[in-house]
Structures are given as structure tokens and as C-alpha cells.
Image (cartoon, rainbow, N blue to C red):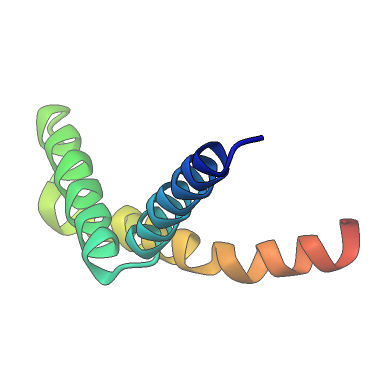
Length: 86
């Protein structure tokens, strides 16, 4: 294997690692969490409004917050799962 080939492979690995780290940063970012909360609230609110539920925007709060709580607790449950089943 030539030195150029090895350097090329290392470069590709480093680029991949950078993409993975960026994806990981996005997955744990506050921006992503706030966007999830906002779009969940918006979609549930619109749905409740369309089906003519009273106070749709108020009633959309609970599902949006519940979804957010479920996404925030996933890392905890992932650790438990890894500890006991892997």
C-alpha cells in the first residue's frame, strides 16, 4: 500500500469523523430541541384547529411538551439499555 493511499484513507476517516461529530452536536443541541418543540406544537395545534377542537392552541401544549420530555429522556434510557442488554 502506498503512502499516498494511506494518507488518502486517513483523510477520508478524519472527514467522516468530523461529519459524525457534527451530527452528534446537532442531535444534542438546544436549537434542535426547540425546533422539535415548536413544530410539534404547530402541527398538533393545526390538527386540533382543523378538527374543530375547542382551544386548539392551548390543548396543543400537552402533546408538544410530552414529546419533548420523551426525547429528552431517551439518553437516560439508552444508557440503561446498554448497561443491561448489551
